Amino acid sequence: MSAFREELRVWLEDACPTSMRTPMPMDEHPAGGRRATYKNPDTKVWMQRMAERGFTVPAWSTQYGGAGLSAADTQVLQEELRRIDARPALVGMGISMIGPALLEYGNEEQKTEHLPKIARGEVWWCQGYSEPNAGSDLAGLRTSAVADGDEYVINGQKIWTSGADKADWIFCLVRTDPDAPKHEGITFIVFDMQTPGVTVKPIKFISGYSPFCETFFDDVRALKKNVIGEVNKGWSVAKRLLQYERTSIGGIGRPNQQVAALEELAGAYVGMVDGRIADSALRREVLRHRMNDRAFAITMRRSLEETADGKAPGAESSMFKYYATEQNKGRYELWMDIMGTRGLGWSGASVSEDEREATRAWLRSRANSIEGGTSEVQLNIIAKRVLGLPDYR
Image (cartoon, rainbow, N blue to C red; front, side, top):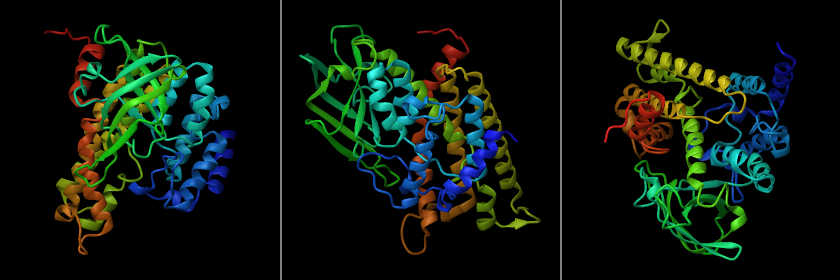
């Protein structure tokens, strides 16, 4: 055993609260932020302890709040966290999307201002990309930003802004040159959600939750110094961030605490014979899913090792996003198969809390094939940029 792994095991046994080694309910996600409240106090304790070690973003430089770990040591950390079934200490667009984009495109002032706060979970970020008339055709966005001294005056609307009602800051695509070609004249800018003129209205999911929002900008003033990258060249930043997002979404297809115990679930609802799921057809489906999970996890690990030099994700992120989407949807379909009619409960004393959560999670999983770019968009990217197929029009 390496010295780092041995030291890490000792630290984790002491630092990780017992309740943080259990499946994570939807209402205990550790997203942080200025207005964060914690149903379970251990959630905040775990986040703070991991942040103090830089383990919320282990590969980032210590200068920006990370631990400065090598790719190999980062892998060791992830393995040890899985070994004790530890929950993620911090989740959100800060560490998975805007943080990596800032590391690549931000200037030193922007990195110093934002990255340490992201690493400590002090700021909740949301994404201002999609608009009512610009979804998959994102470059058709119309939200405008007009220069006025040291500021831009922003007007327009975004939609499907996940977590906007709780977010502290937004990274946003705006059109700064309306006369430029479609993919030009777009600028990537960040600003505080408490800025006057920002209005947020939640949108309720079919699952009953409301993480998506409509976001309106009426004469919102954002400092020019908050432009990430070059003015009118924000499409390059936007595309790169989408690759980070898709890589992050790709992680949902790998085994995790909440949905890994299919055999345990089957034991409760179907029954076991000689330690095996009683229904042979269901047993085969669970085994097939497990094998796919394992193969995908190995492929993801290989990809991470091949990009250990800090290279940003490429078109392969679309492959991971697409496969993870299908794998995650398939996992919840298995949940429903195992639970039968008990998996369709919505309310009432006859339905347990776990069963209600399962129903909502199954419904929520349907959005996986839309968020971060639809499955159709991912297949087009794979065809063109991975397989090199001709683009017929």
